[in-house]
Image (cartoon, rainbow, N blue to C red; front, side, top):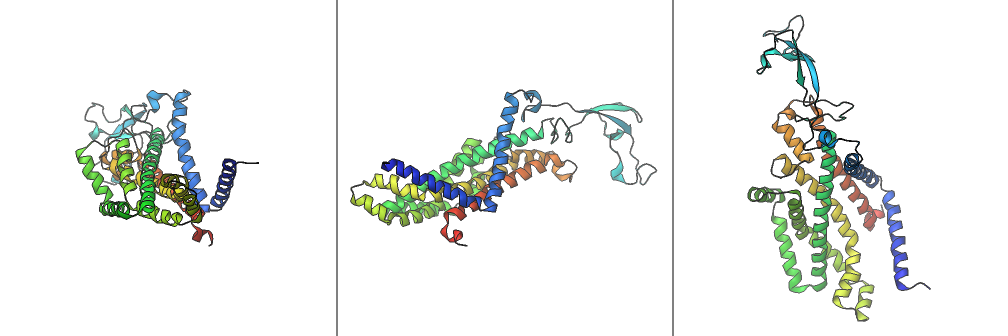
Length: 354
């Protein structure tokens, strides 16, 4: 005969299989999962390429790598008035593979001569599928590095935040009284604080790195409104018959709390965790874009560098410096959100009945 532990394992295994089946029926949830898995693959691909030697770190390192891209240019003198026989509009000169002699401040090349210049930022090519930035660094490698930062920051801050909120919310529901009142007032106070302006103030007085930002975001999120929601769920679990049975059979408060109440609020905590990742990714992008985060490379920093160097205002001429990072932030944050929607359909009985 199976003992109680084996029976409990079978129940959990069947519940997990049932939940996975329901999640697969959610189209939005599966789309989000595929997006998240794609970026997870990118985050693991870069170290693999370096370890196996397929990529030379001196060329493809996202921070200190450099790739020489030389190109021959014909020196021309752009006319002062348009149209001319060769150029119809002011934007046509210099044409492709041409350079205006008036811009050659450090060269004595004459009109009609050919000069060799380092072509940076270089457009996408077979060697660099997403091109290079103004410093000759591979953009695709930077995107992969940014995905590592996004997963590290998002999962770390979400795990910390959900751990804090689940523990505090369950304690507030289980013990009640002054403990509950104190924790609820604390959550109300945190909810009143605007997160981004608070991060701006912190970054002005302290050097924020990824680990610091993860701790700050996790702490703020863990002490905020999620505590109230977890408490509401824990109050419903607290009055369930199996909790009363555990109490009658002599179970201690701590045993009931950790063995019966916490496991039953875990699905809601997991849901909060997934949604928290989205907020963490967006916060990092904003702080990096504003230059307030001390980080070697991230998607927000890529957009920031494109902005300070003026490429972001050049339309689609240097699209590879802007679109990969911007789309990565959008798709990964959206992917986690869609996964959260799918999990909501699994754990929320009202949505399952639709």
